Amino acid sequence: MINTSYGPSGDDGLQRVDFAKIGGASFAQLAELRHRGAFSNVSQTFATCCQRCSSAKDPSIRELPRGWYQKAKSTIFDSASKLTRRSAGLPALVTGIVASDPGTPFFKEALEELHKISYLPVEYDKERQYLELPQVHAMNCLKDIFTNAKLGPYTEPFIMKALTLSAERLGSPIWALRNSGLMLFRALLTKMCRAIPGAGPGFGGSSGSEPGSRIAFPKYPGLLELLSGLLTTAQGEAAEGTEIITERVFPALELVGDKVPSLTDETDEMLRGLVLAHLSSPVWGVREHAARVYASLLTRQNIPEALRALVMLPSTITENYVHGVAMCARYALRRYAATTDAYWTCEYNPALPMISSLTIVS
Image (cartoon, one colour):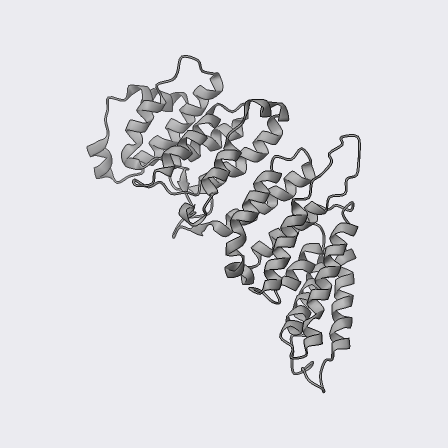
């Protein structure tokens, strides 16, 4: 398929029947196979076949990928009760089809239909062992589309819609929906991030709370509102259980941690308020991550003043909150100490014994 001199277009080369046979055989294998090596081979064959079809001069050949897409949608529903974590070959099927003709009305229509399938309501019943969940397959297809490097410029307008979808599924009582929502969320987070030169992914630096990548928050309207919904736990939601709340909060903290603090950005104060509430989380991992994120949102010039306010503990507190504040002070002071020696010696205020004691306790 790749070697056009072996299989050229035109009367002397591959005809519609040849593309239909190759694409049909690859489709059948991707829809049913479970072997990883075979999957890698067949998915490339199918994607190349779709690409050749879309660039053909014969209109009947160009229509083949659209027919396969309709068949792929049917397969999503037919295999709704056959769940695997990554939906086997279904995402490769859909991605190969839409990648053959990006930026067209067909591409937009396909993504919108996948969103509609992902939003289908689910009747949750604890007694039922098997559920039909085409939503899982649809979200896994979206995940592969957003992680496809060739489709990067074409998927940008759909990021916030997909991020909202994944955020809503993070709160589902059904594990399979939460899991596919989380994988989609992480794929979008990776796509939104821009690496900072010289920094590794995640938190790093000598302080352990320096962002390794950057997200341009103004580029994504509605992102702050979405994070506010994920990081705010209503009073009645405590009944969901710690596990579900943690699975929703942790990825949101990761996203906030990729924002570099700014002196002129008013959103930093709002984000710090959202993160502060999780310093008292009963889950140690959430407290620790919230402490790193809170410290990363402080500008180095304002760290002493911010910590002075943070350690003025309210009258009603928990041990978890004290522990969270102590970890936050440790990471923030490490960031402060990582500034140049001249700045440290000129700006360090020795009249902060409370902060110093907190670093010892932590």
